[in-house]
Amino acid sequence: MNICILGTGYVGLVSGVCLAANGHVVTSVDLQADVVDRLNRMQPHIHEQGLPEMLRRVGTEKRFRATLLLDDGLADADLVVIAVGTPTTEGRIDLRYIREAAGQIGTWLKRSSRFLSIVIKSTVLPGTTDTFVRSILEQTSGKRLGAFGLGMNPEFLREGNAIEDFTKPDRIVLGHEDARTLSLLQEVYQPWSCEKLAVNTRTAEMIKYANNCLLATQISAVNELANLCFEVGGIDAQQVMTGVHLDKRWNPVLAGQRVNPSILTYLVPGCGFGGSCFPKDVQALCTMGQEHRIEMSMLQAVLTVNERQPRQVLRLLEKHFGSLEGRKILVLGMAFKPDTDDVRESAALKIVRDLAQARSTIIAHDPIALDNARKALEDVTVSWVSDWRQALTEIDAVVIATKWVEYTALAQPEHTAHLQGKVVVDPRRLFQPKDFPQAVYFSIGRRPIS
Ligand code: UGA
Image (tube, rainbow, N blue to C red; front, side):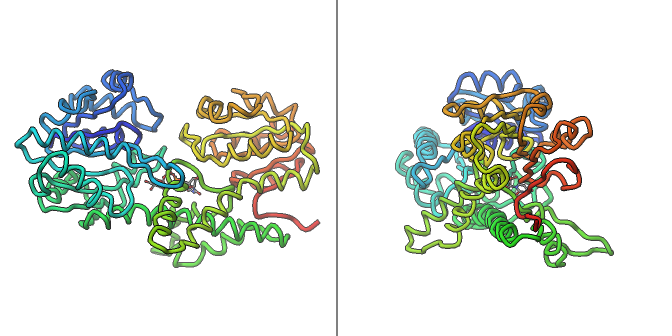
């Protein structure tokens, strides 16, 4: 099938490249000439594992190309996917890019006699596709739904795992407002064998929010329990969670073996969730609920716990040192999670800001997100280092803010030798206390009784 995709962010680009790798012919439309140029040279402008190789393959096979012109992208398309950004402005989802995209497609539809299905992939609030998008399309095209098709096909891609998530999805949600769009979506995803759920577009939209909100809720619920464990003392919240994980409803036993479902990795004490999705999506649903006169007190609490959670790191350090003024602290990791250069809403940035306010001297490192972190923290004085190992000799404390695999080396003897009597704060639970026998080890949700 010929598919046009609007937007080459990590959702649009990964979707386009993966659809092309599954036999479709994809044209991506973007407004930025340098991005289009790079993509046509088969070089991704975003960091995503496996993407460079796959882009090269589909580019060489002439199954994927990029263009600046919508008319060019739509020329042979049976389906157009809108995957533009939906940022948050003052707690509300900002639909300006969706509006522009739908308006331009509607104007194209007016001139065309061909049937085209328009499918939203961007995360939009329930009711957006069948009201807002539909009415823009109808107004600008002068046609009614039926003369064109309308669908909503949410993505469940995790940054850093996006190619794998698209290639081996848990399920595919085929939101549609008309039978032709459903049948086109079924054809698009014919190569995938997972469960496919055909629903109306507002159910599809809600599935996406419900999924992210419940994952975020797990994280805040565990963090709140961990904070209580810390205050009570003598309890390790991680051990508590291990005990909880052994409930067969969380972790079933099949053929005598624990399944260890990946949901368990969200049920671990930490310094809070970040990224471009969880904080934004929970906030958007809270605002929507309030507009419908529902308090949304639980999701509101999920955000409140999360906003405060990075501060636990400061509390641990202050409990140990008293004032942090002049203390040299190395923060390892700036990305909101490993395997991405994304620092949006990263707990690490909040930790750095807290440390700066406490007047400590901050040294910071990240294997790939350093440039993004530097931009996000340009108002804060930080010594950015490309080699964290060298910094170990001169610091008072180290905080592991992102669980990058390379930081596991911190527990090697040549490094622990420099940490004698110093403080290791491990909010991401990369290590065990026994890994640093000669240092003072802290983690969230664990305070030994002295
Ligand atoms: C999230 C969802 O997981 C995707 O299903 C969804 O498609 C995406 O949002 C989106 O809405 O586009 P992402 O933000 O890339 O994906 O990241 P996650 O890997 O889910 O991480 C989100 C937060 O959860 C991070 O702060 C991370 O530290 C935390 N997390 C992640 C855990 O606590 N445990 C994990 O195992 C993974």
